[in-house]
Length: 320
Image: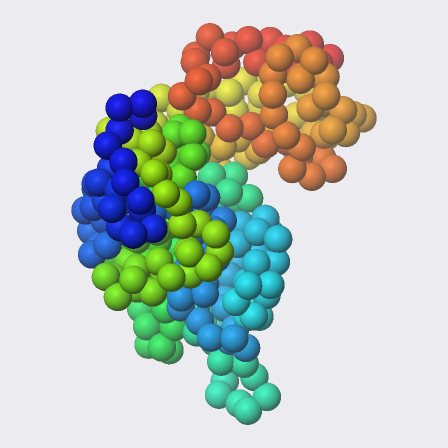
């Protein structure tokens, strides 16, 4: 980062940012890419670029864009969200078909389908390329664009042992984070057609995402993209953590949903999730309560196998 060659990225003059964008586009099999400060910004730029005010977008009722992005689609793009339960599942195509409105003067124009892979609030589960292909076909037949919140799309690719391009084939745009599983300090990439990215760049500037000597940050992103294969270590650590926690009284883990680097734990004893999180934190095990009775743990490059064993021992003592 310290030795990165830099320039003014707002004017398209930062060579390291350009290299990162070209690398990202090539990895995903898309024409172009746009470097943004965050995944939330990239998602909102995609919504703005694909829609018009008064439109409707379709997404899962637990989707990150709906749940964790501060009402951005309504606030920024002026669009209505139609939340569909089970959209990010094997039953997604059927759920999508059922959610599509008839043509009627009383209804908003539906212009965008938003998918998410891996599914954060689903416990890091993977939406298979086959299901994505089917949903993309349904959307295309109805004139909808498809955007994928692929914050952890490389976790999905490593989890299935496939080229990440197979996911990007079934969408018009895709966002992925450098700062989650890939472990860079900051940044996300939005990929799509050249025309889409040119329009998206204008929205990035409007939202305050135009950066000057951003090559310092882009350099870290290039290192992250050279480290994709190591995500398998995170998945193995998450599996060991999940299996160990599932054996403790007062905790329940749906092991079939532990497919990547996220572990969701249900607290079924007398303690609340917040109580367990506090007690774990006091012993150096950091995690978060994702609901009154649920805890979310995420493995990453700074968590090793020894850390997993320590976390399991502490958890055993806490729930006892």
